[in-house]
Image (cartoon, rainbow, N blue to C red; front, side, top):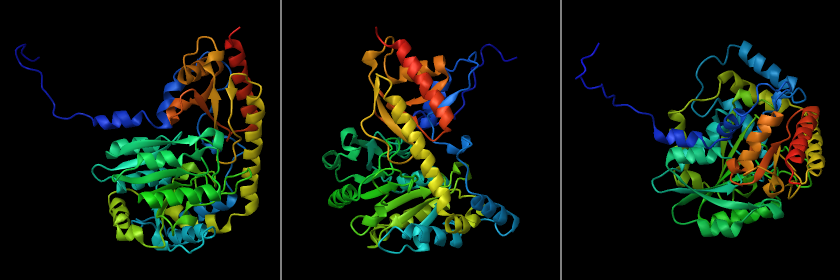
Length: 420
């Protein structure tokens, strides 16, 4: 036992405080906080309408072609070693060919850099532009992981609004007013997460011209690419690569319904070579030297996954998303305190507005979601976590019967709390 007079040992290490702040921003952190309110005594199943993880539902299963491709790659024993830092060449070539189908120019394998899902693609894109004093323009509402990564990298965040009544178009006047000589990039998520919108060709052209005027690059998050079911087709931002340099982020996670396989990419859409001239490409390569890479056997499966998947698989996924989005719209119409500005046309979630003035004992959207979880075992993401207070993000990539039940409980909850 130590003498009473001996001072307690002081250790020199402590956690990085930036991590604690950054960890509160992503959706996972918010969901964990809300799910702590679940009542363990409720015998009903918990219905999660808060996260885009479609394979949890039996109706969303990847194509056997993708499974066979991974099994074949694994059994071949050709992919048990380390991969080149940018990814194996056949995979990069297949991604270049896949993305070039929608572009007015051809991508090279040298334009493609493989990542551990789209999360690492975000890490890379933000890290590469994180010079001292830099700021980045992010959409609001948006995907909060960008804020978390920017905080960790010391990049100042400035938000521009997406306009609900204009189908969530970018407020381009706000973009221009926010930018200065330290602005490095703006983020554009299309199809939209969390809004479910799909930008038109005409609007994307205006975004490109605005970015060119400001001298900034565009980080185009297209992880939900081609998952559209409305009047607007998916147009990749890379179409405008000759106007403004674009870093396209994507993965097989959503379109192939395999988020757990963790294989994504960063692609330089830059036919004018601006990203090479400004050393951004060198920065990407430097980042890859000090980071991890996707499992090599998944990389080995990419050519078959991208080249052999049939359209009927994609069409089935789209049909289910169209059906579940319609279910959301019909059920939301039955709830007086919740409205939506426009129909979702893509991705797997959309935003609805909550009028708390119609409800008794509800302070705001966070309070609403916590009490909904406790009383109805339904988990919905509060809009505050994506930048829009007193809105809600509802994910519709779930089993139709489960979605119906979750929305029925939501309606019952709202009716029970409605002011008399």
